[in-house]
Image (cartoon, rainbow, N blue to C red; front, side, top):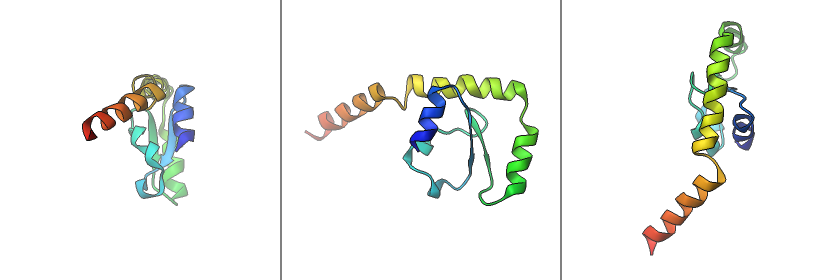
Length: 91
């Protein structure tokens, strides 16, 4: 989970398996084809196809998107704002 956010903060797109039930909540930051790519869990052929098909242009675009993901949301400022809103709405 936090490894994904850390990678995005370094402008690194992610390649992760597609079984969302086996990811931590930070998986919500992942957008397939935008800030990373996914492959079919437990399927080495699927991972191979993803690795062989990605282009330099896609990597550059996903790198920019990965950094934007944590610049605009999925960061401590955004988390604090959402937490504050939650408290205000429950009082």
